Image 1: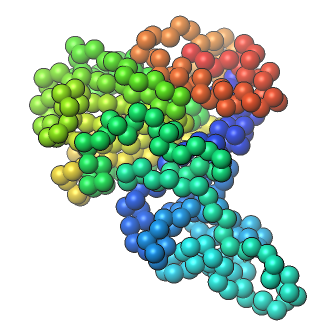
Image 2: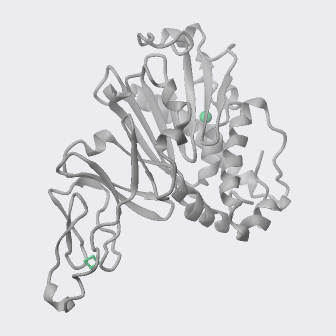
Image 3: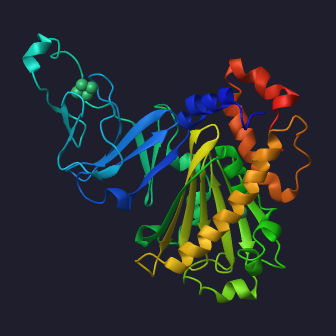
Length: 359
Ligand code: FES
Ligand SMILES: [Fe+2]
């Protein structure tokens, strides 16, 4: 089964993530010169840092000496990164600064480029994306219609509010499937999300290669919860939007102009790091009520995905028919399969019934 196959997981890490635009940081994470964030894209360790000229750079987080990962976590590099192995140093623009015991290299250093390896980085509003593939088309074309939807949201003015980080023992695709599953809300989220949507018809707006957009009109109860941001169109003022950006990012846009993001970063075939972040126009500090509510929603999802993890292990599992509110899942799998399908060594595995995974 492709949700549990180590071979498919490795192919996803080698071929899918490195050829996709992956969200690696928020502009606020690297607000000041020297601020840095590390991330992993597929198998690639990545370092994002703001240099002293204010430019945001992405580099392979790999020391050009013997490959040690240069930086860990996030923080401020205070002007330079020092490799923890032999002490080579690099400035925030990735340029090699010093090598302890330089003479001992017997003149081999002169003709080599020993700076950090730059990676392709594009910024959309406040979100910093990296693509490992040098020939990848620009982020703006990858995002398709998504930026247009947020044109009046003033995303740059939003303040980070609540962050929830969970590590869960689930395959990343089951979490993405669930985020794209617009059919599970009435039962799984009966007491949390559903009351604001009861009686309303969810509408898929856009289905593109790397993105899809679902519009969820709010009922009177939902509309009471927040007043619409001035400048949003008639539909946006009355609806929540769920936007999927391939492969592992969901953005929720709300009528009050606030947004939530949900990202699923694979760790192993059966474990994933989940990061929920909310951004608000009005509230700057962490909102504990929202944190509690969102933790409850996430736990409702984890409980059901756990049950799916159990079931898909079975030899008797074959995907059944798909409801129209599961259409975005099919879209995600079709892009995924088209990227994996280029790998001839996987063709048999992906095509066999036993390993089929499309809904
Ligand atoms: S591996 Fe980085 S200085 Fe040697
Ligand atoms: Fe859910």
